[in-house]
Image (cartoon, rainbow, N blue to C red; front, side, top):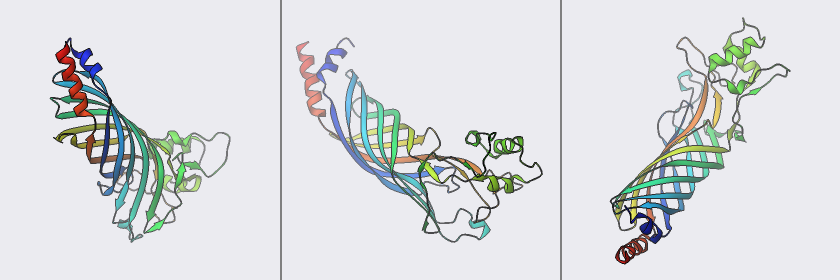
Length: 278
């Protein structure tokens, strides 16, 4: 252990390039399953923080092009017989993950960290037709004006939203499934910024070539959405089964990628040379 500072000084920053694919879904959009496939590619640097003969700790900084979203053959409201097309959401992100990697015996690596992403491409299709979704705050909006209207962006579910509306003086005898569409506009945007928690498992295949599995999940909602029972969005989707028509949506993705790390041989050679001089 006493040699660790010297070995650390002997190492150099390692570069990495990677390419792979994502399978993803958006939690809270009623399109279940990891059915959206996309590209994951980029480059990064690994900075050594601590090294012994068997274990090393590295700080990784990456720049990534990452395709996420959702995909479903059936319509969101197919059980009503209203839609016959597909639903598809394409979210293309430029991401900067910051990762901490622990490597055991120079072969197995576990990583944890966080990622910041900015949307660089957005497309949503319902029944094969493009919608007017754009970048914004991803929140519900008031259709009416008033000085004492509550902040509806704080509502976590339809029950909190109901309490807000009736508490603000809207007619208590008006059913919530009719009141909400009358006074509240559904969100028509996605948040441009996304923050994710990341977890990695990396295995060395040969020399500097590695296989890596990464899991990512949004730390805050990318959109808050209302779901309706009618195609023209006049009746909220509420029934006796306590269906939750207000959903906060989160990116949820799995990535399998191939990583090639540069300068590993040079770093190891420097370490061995430092050992001999001690």
